[in-house]
Length: 286
Image (spheres, rainbow, N blue to C red):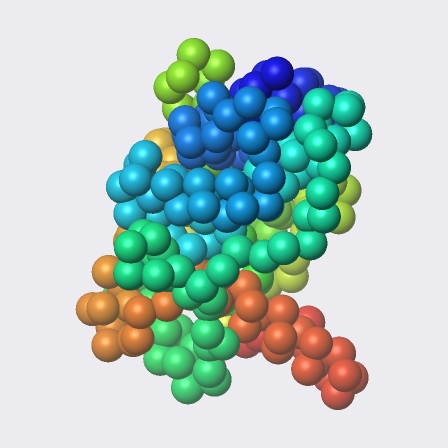
């Protein structure tokens, strides 16, 4: 039995256990990165040393990939291996080993995200306010509302209720495998009840949106169906939006940073506000 055959059974098992967006993301990584490297391995060749040596080849399959992508697929390989052990296809061994530090020849990419500071957050907000494109407002909303990059790509003006002062977070955008070996950009519902949420808008956010983008809203405060990040009928995808964020940081004089730092900053601020029992549930724009 090969790794690819074990992975196929693993995918069938997971199909009924996880939400659709998570499954499609897993299948995309499986087909794009894992199977090209590990697929032909026989079950008796799956060992700790083989996994640790082969995982770095993912960078050679698709060119330079980030360390985050390598780690994600490293965990996927271990999950499939554990599944194979449970089915009796793979000889049991401990799976508590970790991905090592990348070497010059390993193709390792970016490191972990660094915490966004208060001064950097203020500088980012000012830059977004000065150049209020849909993409930049999407960055601002991600910082203030704690959006994941897929959620920011999927956000539409129609998700806003400016009269009530709330926005609904209900969907995500992902690039997924279409089942034929190709990938497509898909807008998917957030699967977990806790993921679907309604967030209050601060007064300054409401003023900004009503001012620069007032024409996107009906008199009753409900927005049109255009995507916020593109301000058009067509959405952007996470990897494209991530590159746009990189360019925004460069043009704004900010250090290179990951999009995930916006959400990390928001979550950290929320914990601080809760611990201090402050009333405002959302970071306000100065």
